[in-house]
Length: 299
Image (cartoon, rainbow, N blue to C red; front, top):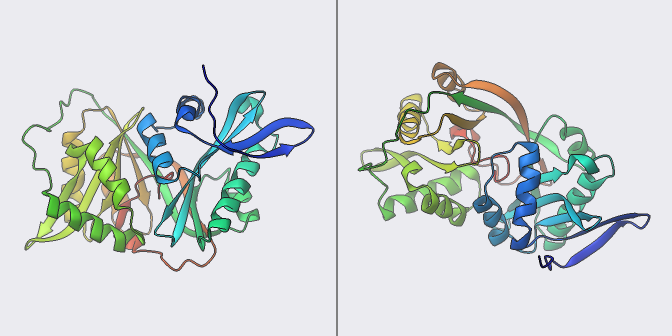
């Protein structure tokens, strides 16, 4: 197999055969291998989203000729950037690979002039991010629903948002999220149109949801609503349309009602996450309206 030709960035340690380079589409199988080792939920389509959004801003670490780590970035309107998919092969941990990948991503974004960097940290990663200058913004929780897989999904005949409605989704999402990610949402809609849901009041869009068909579970997010009734309607519809026996939701705890709603449907908490930022947080969005984020890797 021809070796990926991503541009070499640096040798991390002259005494250790380890180097960083830009990730390419040819590295997606290697990324999937690391993702599977971590038991994460991403698909090749998700890796392609990172690489299309940031062709110069996704990185791999190579050790002994093999990809042993990854990190991705996405820049939103040059207002802020998201760092995600920081993965290291368990066989190569303890050699500073994760730190080198993070520092490489931060250097790239700093050189590009992005004022604010954000990420969603696991408890294990949080101390490292704090050392690199990241501060806490919000708390998140991953909730999981396990159910019988007999549900066939109600995709046939379901109402899909008209194009002007989808434009309204991206316009509202820009205010709620804090930056324009319309291209990313459009790619989710193309891949899983049955999961694109809206709630309207007097012909005005008040809530919306999208979703992804992950490798391990269907993932609901973003899930945005100003009130519990609209949030419940979106969650009901998503659960009817999904055919999977496992559903992931990343609840934004600043939302006052989504956690109780998830619990009432049988979702269970599996892990906490912490949303962190570095630099001026000038575009925080409207976290109180976010029932669930798109995902820790995307924001």
